[in-house]
Length: 171
Image 1 (tube, helix red, strand yellow):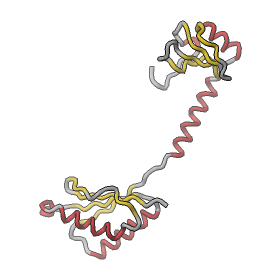
Image 2 (cartoon, rainbow, N blue to C red; image 1 turned 90 degrees about the horizontal axis):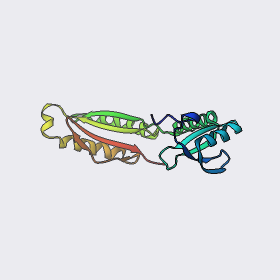
Image 3 (cartoon, rainbow, N blue to C red; image 1 turned 90 degrees about the vertical axis):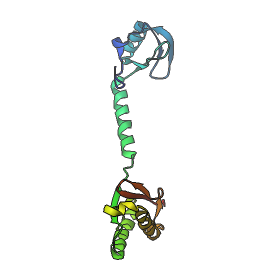
């Protein structure tokens, strides 16, 4: 049985269940058949909501309506999720100052839009021997943009790249 599967009416195998009505009425511990009769009389379903409890807990409710409300809740939760957009800006150790200015201008625009910006300095050939040069480059860039954002963490060396993530300032 998967997590999504819910046992209804005759599918419930327990002989005794703790039964709760749709309106909050507690029927106590009764036989499954008795609970089914009560549900049928009200024109509702008997739904197993806590199969691991002793005895299992069942609720008398309109299952179609219940499922609809669950799906509605999930859609609402999905709407409220915020998608974080990360823009990547690539630099090199031997980049000219005017190129840095141009890339920093773009980074500032992204931060204003509320996007995260990841700066990456690519280390070529012999530059791998001195990755500190990449860290120095990112520190230089950080000085230019620190008013617009927050640095996630210090520049980090990862393989051939030196990375730094900058998040927009709140408010």
